Image 1 (cartoon, rainbow, N blue to C red):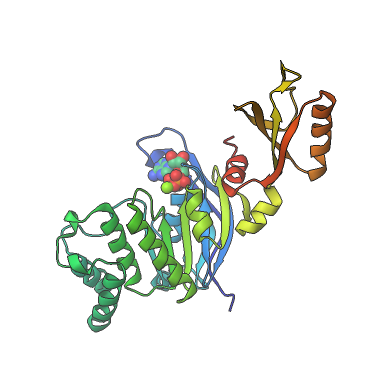
Image 2: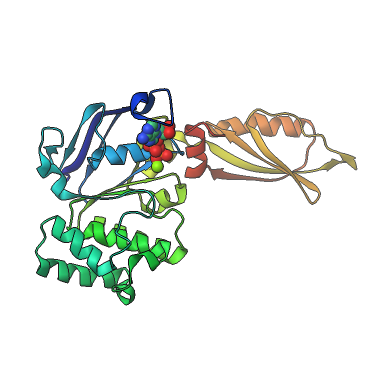
Length: 321
Ligand SMILES: Nc1ncnc2c1ncn2[C@@H]1O[C@H](COP(=O)(O)OP(=O)(O)O)[C@@H](O)[C@H]1O
Ligand SMILES: [Mg+2]
C-alpha cells in the first residue's frame, strides 16, 4: 500500500517585490522542489531558517499559489479548481495562531469540524477522544486565549485531526513548547502515521526532532532539496569516519608539539594528554596520520572509532560548518 498521498513536482515560489512591502527585490524562496509522501510515512523537511520550509507547506495547504510546479494531494491536482483535493488535508502553521482564541477548545473543534462538513455527532466523538488523548479535556470549556503555548499547540493538533485527514502538514510543530507538550504531540503524530496510516509532512530546523520522528528526510537549503533519504541512507552517503585520538603531551619530559594534520579538528588539552578528532572519507586514511605521530615518537594513548551524527552531516550539507 505504498500510495503517494502528497506529490510535489518542480515546485517553485518567487515572492514578487510588488506584492511585498518589506523588500524591493523578488525573493526566490522555493526553487524546483520535487518529493512525494506515502501513506503511513512521516516525511521531514529539514533546513535552516529562511530555507523555504514554511513556503512549501503554505503552497501544499493552498494558502499561497506556486509560481510554477504541480501539487497532487491524494492523487488530485490542486490547481485545476479541484477543491476536492484539500478535503483530505489539514495543516498546522508555524506559531500559536492556528485556533480561535476567543472560543474554548471544545468550541474550536466544533467550529472547525462544522466548517469542514463533519456531522456534529461525529465531531463530538472525535473531540472527546482527542481532548482526552492530548490531555486538554480539563480545560475544554476555558477560553483558549488563557491556555499555555503548549496547550494551544496541542489544541491546534486536535483541530487539525477533527476532520480525520489523510494528509497532515506540520510546520515546526514543537518549536518553543514545554517538554511534556512536545512529547505528547510527537506521540500522537507517530500514532497517526503508523496506526492510522496518515501521510505526515513535518518541517523543522531541529535535527533532534527529525532523528526521533522522520522516516525520510529532505534537507533544504536556499529553496532547493540538497539531499534526500532515510536517516540511515543520509548517514551512509554523507558520513565520514571519525576517530578520537589521544596522545601523551610530553615526550621524554619535553612538551610535545602537535603537527598540523589534514582532517584534524577539535584539538583539546586534557590532563597530561592532547586529544583530537580525525575525520576521513576512507578508514585507511587513519594510517598515515598515525605514522606521522609515531615518527615524531608521540605516545599514542587511545584511538577509537566513531561516526558523525546526523547533526554534523546536516551542518555540513547546509554549509554551516
Ligand atoms: N510573504 C513573503 N514575502 C517575501 N518574502 C518572503 C515571504 N515569506 C517568506 N519570504 C522569504 O522567503 C524565504 C523563505 O522563507 P520561509 O519559507 O519562511 O523559510 P523557512 O520556513 O524555512 O524559515 C526567506 O528568504 C523569506 O524571507
Ligand atoms: Mg518557517
